[in-house]
Image (tube, rainbow, N blue to C red; front, side):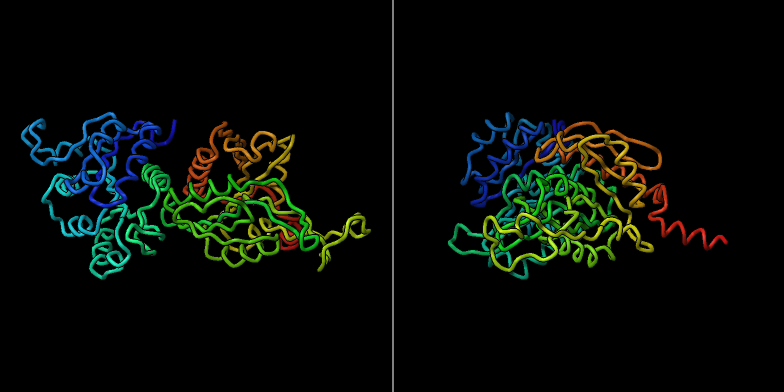
Length: 418
């Protein structure tokens, strides 16, 4: 069961080479529980047959504006009325021009003009066609009309050239379709997410690190972006692609992550501190590889890394901070203690043995009102629940911290009272 299960999508296919990708897209949508209705232009049928898409969607494929099986011959009205979303992929330069100008000379362009639901367009064309000022004017017009454009991607093209113009892959387009169904509860917000582990060098070939996969942080970044936020992701070394539409900053060490967070946090409204930052680093990393058996390898001198979350939380008029606590036991006690010590309004906590390195997990939120179990499920589903909880706290002004950040802060308040 996905967030798109039960949704109804009309998939429009135009005449581009990338039409072959729509077979995979239809299969992915059907697997996600989506009801898919396919409409093709005449040119699209030259690249992939209606029979193929009918077999994959389980429904009749529509191509004719004058189809007699539709009452009153109004397919351009009836076919989109029960749909939650219209997706055109691939969208050729010709179709984009039609849509921008409101032209309606075939079934697909007519129903796009007559629709009452949102529209996603996935451009696909030669790089020169994409870069032409006429195409860019049409694209700008669609965006101004509220149309969601996905892509194009940059890469090799059927013409043998390389550049912008490739249709995004079906998996990426599926993610954007799912995003279209999410509530835009963070619209207008700027969100900063830290994710993944850090690596603290011992010598040029050895590091101190941990087993964080980065999956939870990347899921939070995607969920925040789906919720309408402008998202920056500061990531330690992981093997994960950045979510579409998310700005990614790569770092390696805790100090590099701290520097990147300091730079970005001043302009953000919400900070999700998901990264598993190393608590300590080697005080003096060796410039050359330390040989096996060397005394310096048997006894490493460590020094403490900066506490990134505490620093952000202590800033005057700083962002709303969400801490993460990965524990091996006594989850509630440790999570509450971390929330009080860091002075943050919300901590999301989990047991490492239940989620570390896995696609699924369990998460419990701790705020001033108590504990809120999100249950177990895919990390993206948990991240979406977390984002909704944060949005509700922001709406209610729930930024109050539960305890003094530090003993020094408490002492300053006591002095002021005197």
